[in-house]
Image (tube, rainbow, N blue to C red; front, side, top):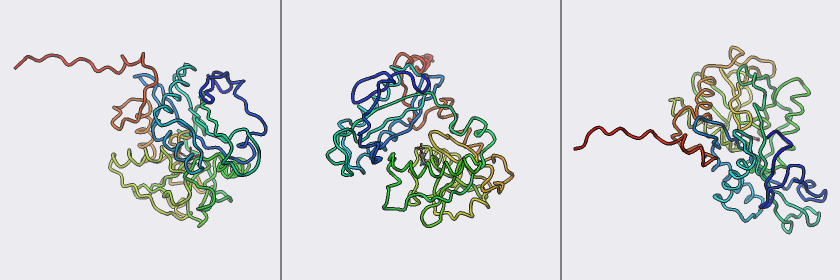
Length: 324
Ligand SMILES: Cc1ncc(COP(=O)(O)O)c(C=O)c1O
């Protein structure tokens, strides 16, 4: 299904895309009182599979907890809703957007009495920064906007409100002719892109800003850290100054939408040789092999969607080699 077609799950029912509407007096529209997720389902040789559905849905529930939003679904029922939404739309591969939001009752900043509504949408969404970006890398700038200061809007919650900040970063970058912006935190240290986490490579070591630098604790970030350590790289989560971008050998973004996207210049200064570096390429390849099901799923990161595809996953029967 492309964007604008198919069915959307809303509060327990599937409705046609065109009917998944809300009233103009809905709280979330006025006060940004929503939390959401962005996950992906990939088509693999063993059938369609969601990548790391559990941490995504756990993060949704944690974002809701931070904002005192209660919704009567636990983790397992949430998995079922997501899987059912993919199945009913007969998607092989898709982007998945679960959303919890303060609904319609009355207006006023205090959301505590406002009901919490939920929806899950799926649609086709290719490479977020374009497929050329995955191959060639992107040109980015350091944003004049910083990420939210700690204890203002919680960066660890994936709240709709945070994306007002992301939109400022993204708009400035695009208007200035760049693909993306990198935001600093309130102390002037590196934070993240408008919708991606950031990695640097220097002398073969991998560095990434910590959760205390106003980043979203990305699930792709966690996956890349895991894959990099398994491949023998040292990965350090550490506070990084802005200028580390200009002296890095390699810089790359990671995220559900952006996957693993090399950065080839920052503020018109070439990163390394101005093209994707070997560590970035190695990790990009490793990541794509996992999400595309081309290597064994050693971490149980894939949740298969269609029961009828189970035969694709059956192991060949062991050949009897004689009894004892
Ligand atoms: C601000 C921000 N940072 C980082 C990420 C990457 O997170 P994930 O890998 O969980 O998609 C996202 C995407 O959701 C994001 O919006």
